[in-house]
Image (cartoon, rainbow, N blue to C red; front, side):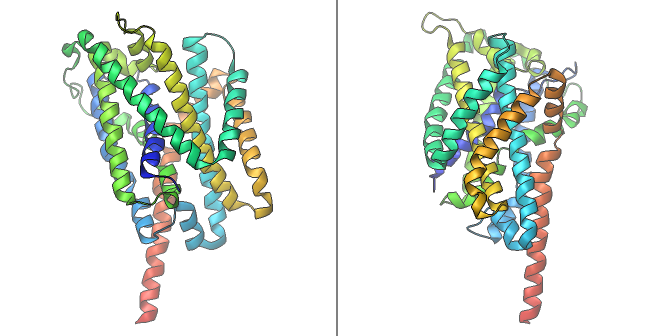
Length: 358
């Protein structure tokens, strides 16, 4: 079991990753102010797409999505568990390749994917064997450090704010927003680990979801406001807007905040990857016989290493992963389709039981 604070830190760090690596938009009609509206839209959308799993889990208290799958579908739950395993693997690979691309293309400009993957994989192997509780405690520390960094960014960038950049976000109508719905949907998949790990948290799940979502909205909106007020329309067209923003900070009181930014982002990305792989291992353990449980963690980490190396081997293959993740299809399947299917089965079963009793 982990505390609500630890779960809040874990899920929030997963969400904050989306502020560090933006899905760039080359369209001239998409301005910086539009990014602020998109984040608010994502806040509302996350409540909507979370309705199926929340309703399902409220009917099956003490269970997560995987337990519900086995309870409602029997052996077919293995298929659902494997589908979620694939989803979490895909999300973890998207995370680590995003960090690799950032470090090798923007920071160090050298070919070190193998070294980065090796270090990540070894640390992940240790973390997965340690369990969820130590990861949760680590996440709280990084969460606080991240909030401090956000506060410093806002404070030191105030003199560079140009409010003229904050012009009408609806200047070009709704078309730019409609085209970005798959991306917004994909960036709101960070709550799926919460729905899988519900049994590990002893508190009101709906309140926990609402608190986490609100915290995420406030922090990310503040970062996007700062980015837009300083970078203007360059914000949605630059993948690493936050890094560009931090490099513009130069005061007599603090130097090289960009180095701290890189360190915090790597730690944040590590926590996100570890949580996703923990969920992947949890799903796989439910899908395989108990005698194979001892092989689940090394198999998952090895698969993660191989997948990360494959997808980072060329830009075209990396772009394929990028397009798959941000198409919205994986999130649609994991957070809406499968939970809705389980919810329908639950409702039909209840209706049948009511008829038998009458």
